Length: 581
Image (tube, rainbow, N blue to C red):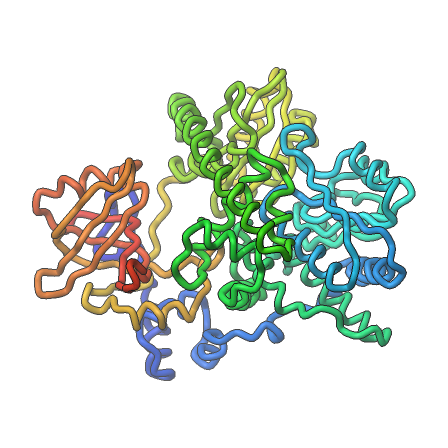
């Protein structure tokens, strides 16, 4: 049965509540624990039993962090890395150019610096070299180093790793593996085909952190001490986990929760400078990691110098940090301008091709490869389908794809690459990259669409909107929001709870910028609630709510605390609405 009787909202969705069984579980938990009902509804949806509720709200990392040795090759990788540190060998770090790669590199650079070693950082140029190790770069690094550690890349890099003659190579990655692995010292990757997948939710920075935990264990067993404080590095792990959209489940939830505390202590010069240039004026949250800090770290790899983000995260010098943060902020502004132009062209092309196919895609000459992934995300959101956006140059296309829940895009792209329709491609379930010859573009996209159709992508309609409960405006206060936040952090795989607010009138509505809408809602008996709807005018929400004509609506969204001018107030992050009958 639909929630509040909403079968077809203004965005075309049906609203669903918890259901009778989960509602009863929430009521039982509230009686057993004394916790507020809205919080119990969140915990019930997560499957938390009453006797575990208090522990879930205060997770301890030591209880949730898996034994690193559960991953294949972990002991071998840690032993080789520790040997390089003990014998003062020359170490190079080859990293991907995104936030996960930069954070993973920074973890190792900072740790090694604390051990008295300066490692070489190498991050390939997105346009000139593309993703992952290449023959020339690996051969060059091998000539001057004893050990090369590839982070957030390398699992599929058989040729480039073979080219690293004279140096040992360790791969610390999380991207989908192939049937065979590169010939190197170790490939530590929870998404290798011979892993059980239980730890597949870790991003690369999480894998790197686990290796450092294992290095610490081996060093202690050899009487070498414990090395640097690993807990102080969790701000980097949290940033990578959220920015890479890794699910906030299991150990990831505790890593991010603790990492936010470390970030709040403002001890890392690079993140302090980035927070300041981003005008962060509230306690760090997953929103700040994903939408303020992450995009700026990414901006260097997208349209600037690829290593800027990693250098910022690793530096100890506040002056260098301020200069790098300022440059990344400028690049992020430039990136937005480029993205907007590509987005408009891609949206027009995809709409002309149709939003009802299993795959929504667009390709254009000269589209910057640094923004195609972001634009693919926008297409995916608009269509509710997997999306791929490709920039063409000199007869070759480099693209990026984003998927929706339940559809494994990475596997489909790997299959198309194995069949020869793509030059190369890989990634994971929700995001992947590819390279395609322009003369094979149409058949490659058709094959990819067919593969996704077999997973059910072609039958997808507007996703149901799942709500955790119903509230009235007067109940949405700061205390309740802070209690609900204890069930966080929220993000991928652990969505922030949504609540329905029934039969409200609009006191005030104002368009903000091009696409956003600011609202003030009331129940007519003294309960009022401010709301913000981002991207409202990209959907039917904006026009209808702005020109409401006095009509009453049911509203749905996520509660948050709005900090402005030193004051805090509850706010609804509006996601949907339906006319109240």
